[in-house]
Length: 192
Image 1: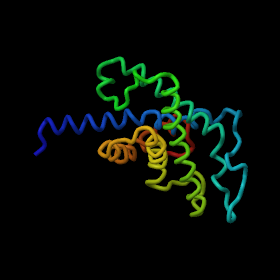
Image 2: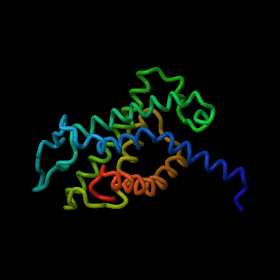
Image 3: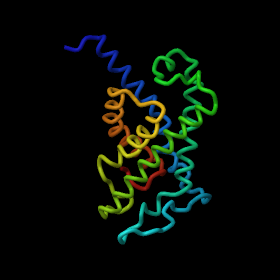
């Protein structure tokens, strides 16, 4: 039987985990907001082919990588601001208010870059398996950016085990919901 203390402890872990990952979530969505911007629309692989296939594909651009890093940094500054409110301070795993600007930029960039590099690594393997760009690859499409962000930020702050488990489990349905919303708004070409 689940008592109320365990329930609230579990809910706190979930909220802390999701809140911690906010910069990575923002970073993962960022490229879709800038898709029509011509600036930086250069593929990261510059069209290079390995064993008959593109390294990453045409959709992995400098624009996407830089916008992801920027959104990760913006999100962590937002978290620092929100940490002045007691409820957000309670769900904060990081001491946002104690960080100076450079520390915030560094951690936000780690989460943002990690998220986009995780996605890039997944694209590399997707091309090797001959899965076309834009085709679903469940659950890797949902977890690639999370794993990348967690690995990158672990250099300065490894997420506790139960928080990591919560992020891995909850990101899959959240990813589908966000993608459906982005598709409905015309920000994505496919619903997955």
